[in-house]
Image 1 (cartoon, rainbow, N blue to C red):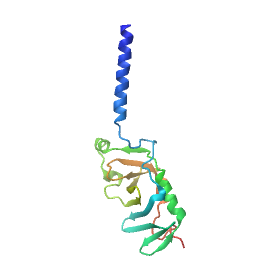
Image 2 (cartoon, rainbow, N blue to C red):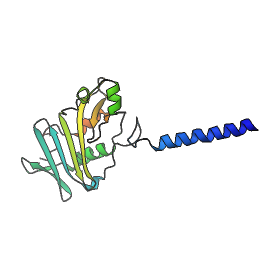
Image 3 (cartoon, one colour):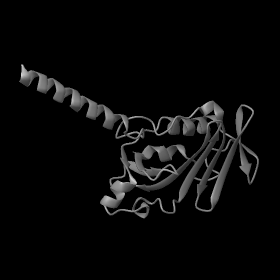
Image 4 (cartoon, one colour):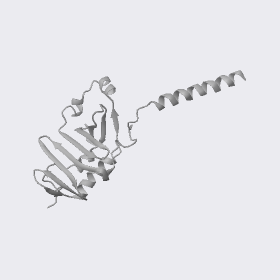
Amino acid sequence: MRTTVILILASFFMLALIWVFDFNEPSTPTIGEGKLCTLNIDSVSRILIRRGEELIDISRIGSGWQLAEPQNARVQYSAVNKLLNTFENLCAFENVSEKERTHRELTLQDYGLDKPETELLIESGQGEFVIHIGNKSIIGNSVYLRLPPHATVVSVPADFLDALPKTRNDSFIRS
């Protein structure tokens, strides 16, 4: 009887420890789990894409989208919708925290995120989402992102890049 009571108490103690540590885990998505962020597509008012020196500035005008600079050109609604849907449904393959990077002796530069060549800013009624886009992984099926101010580096499917316009003049612009 005494052994049974000890085992029951030990079990409750272990469950309590699991609950405490699991409860205090950060809510960032883990490998293959959860979306990077919750985005209400209908509340998005502006998208800025910076690639090197080029800036693509797209604003919602009524029910459509317009390229703000350097010319006021209409933008394909379907292309913007594809970009926003892709971002909204983006899930992480892997999260690498600042502590893990330090342990692996890696820096943001190793991921192409110290001075990212491409940045995406999405303004919405929920606030601003800033995404720094880094290098493709060595095997090429994923790309590294960082969502400042968070220090975590996130690996996502590389086909995310296909939703981004390459230049102001690509198929994103309605002719």
